[in-house]
Image 1: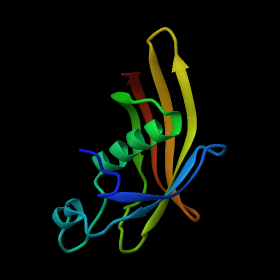
Image 2 (image 1 turned 90 degrees about the vertical axis):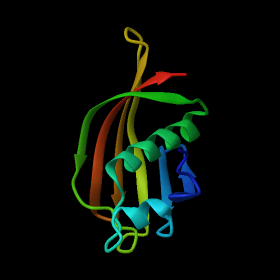
Image 3 (image 1 turned 45 degrees about the horizontal axis):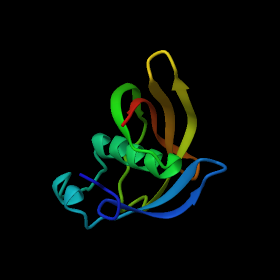
Image 4 (image 1 turned 180 degrees about the horizontal axis):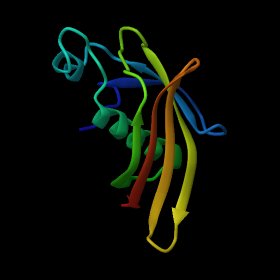
Length: 123
């Protein structure tokens, strides 16, 4: 499932800093199910969003091969934090394994919500 324009929309993109500012869309069906009383962004959606943004950043499509590390440091609630920034800290090809290793942080202001280390195959 593509989450762009359903769970989030891109407000701005900066290829120099490899970052995207996103607006979270609280009317998305995912938020209504997770959870009705207090919507929070599911971890799998945070990872899927990173994957979609990697494609936007590189102009190539990648398939997630694995999650080396995922640290969820704070809850991403679209009512409390309607905008977040995804920052791609590291994007490095691994020639030996034919993969791309990616480090991403999800932030807003002084709060880091998520730190991800992801591994992708080029499609």
